[in-house]
Length: 169
Image 1 (tube, rainbow, N blue to C red):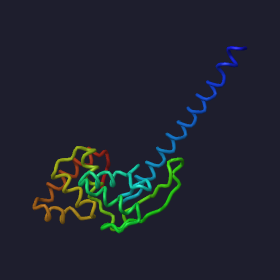
Image 2: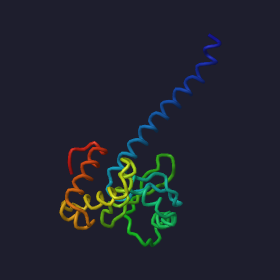
Image 3: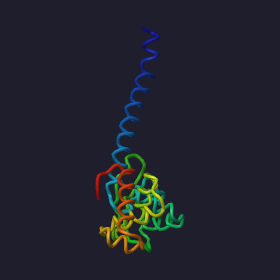
Image 4: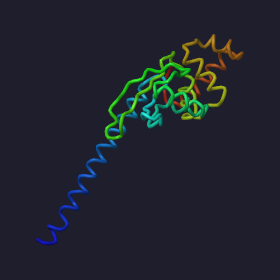
């Protein structure tokens, strides 16, 4: 009994910590899924401007130019930024005040195209074709834009659909 009374508090603390970590992991997964559902660049940023989380578009956009971190930091701190963001204050859940920044401009598919092309191992030409496909262009217009035949466009699309495991546009 004496041994159990000594060990029990430590076990209770460990179980509480494991529960807390489990909930925290589930919340992080939910946050990542919610951010990835946003079609434009989105970031969760601390009050001091540190990027805590970003969706795939946001990560790709930041990877293109490290100076863009300064743009995000300025927007998070309420200063004028060259790129318009919608800023929403959110509860940091123990991490202090945070902000959700979402790019307000048109939905730029460029970063998402780059992420998809890397994920599926597309060639540079297939990546160009994907960018045009995302814009909703027909095979004929894509062929004219890339100066290739419609059959070549169809061949590229077939290869891309197979790699991405999709059946069509």
